Length: 118
Length: 79
Image 1: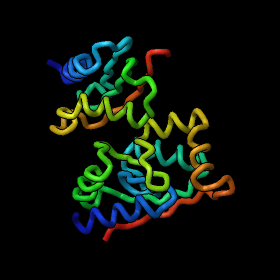
Image 2: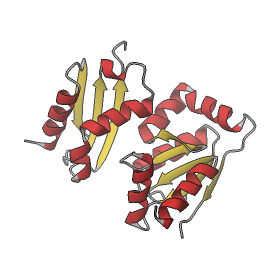
Image 3: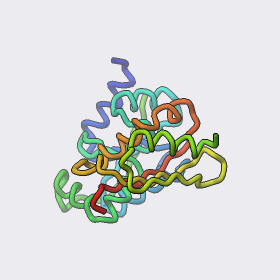
Image 4: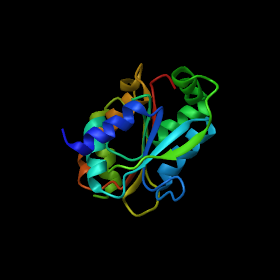
């Protein structure tokens, strides 16, 4: 297993909510990444964002780990939740907030931070 | 064959029971697609599992770059 893959796995397993996206929360480079970020924020998620654009290897290793072919990818406590369509659908139904409540407790704060891969 | 037709044929082959199947070219450029699909194969599956089945059916156009962006809406047989 490559070092990069280890780093990605580390983020997925340790961050409460991780979002692998194109661009950063400050400068989103893709409509779908934007949709996922907005849904997470609206649901009050503490988001740790990882930009996959700096190195094509990131996306390759991420997909090798998750088996999910597209970006964005959202994980809650290590579990793949899905891409933009699923996250939006779960937010609209209230399921996303319920899952966040179950995983992280109801008194969480909606925050955004970024994690960089070395 | 237009890319959208190829996608529809692939999905039809993987989901012969589909009660609803639509592939919309969202931008007219032949690489941004909205797939809407209702099938009994989705019954009882999580959304992640449902979308994985769609990705599996479209693995070739996803890998060769035909699909630049894919939006998916899945429904079970009951809806």
